[in-house]
Length: 264
Image 1: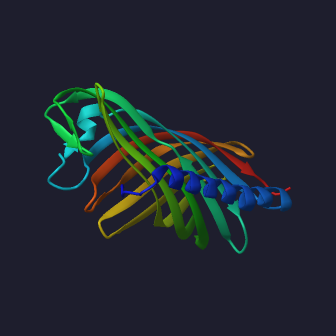
Image 2: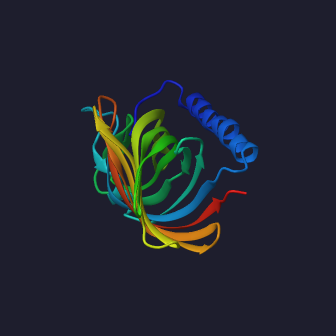
């Protein structure tokens, strides 16, 4: 999940600004200039639990591999998410996701840890784990058979991540901002005109690591243009390279509202 950048603050600002500009100049004009198009907005809140979270930085004999989840506890932690999907043409659509995530906890290190060149004794320690994700997806409807709909596409993800340990006046941080290409899939099964099951996800494996974000949710229409949903989500991935080792897995319970803009 992490790789070192010479100027993470400047790169983080550049990537965030690029995402915002893309959203403003591609999506907003689409909504207003083409009133016959529909759009879908999902406002999701999740309760997330850590299944594992192993860290070593740098990934060599000078550092200690430790279990971040044992230091901070398993959770649950708040995990909000906003998703916007906009049709463009020929059964294609754009999808944008903003998913910030942060853990701020205090716990006890069971043994000494060396992290980012700093030495931490066994004992009370504060920790931060941040993994903010911003994504843009292009996807195509590849099949519709009866009550089933299948879509496939590609996703570009901006990852903005940080791990920090604090103990007294001692503080050490590993931060990373970067771009990750992913594959995307979407499956929908309609049960009636008012309910459906949706499975969608982004993921890719290869090289020194992998990434997976997989969601299953049941959607129920409350009135035209407004639906409620609940489900589960799995976020899993990590990297093992010369500079860092970090593999984390989170399990979510998710709830939310869906807003649809119909043809006018």
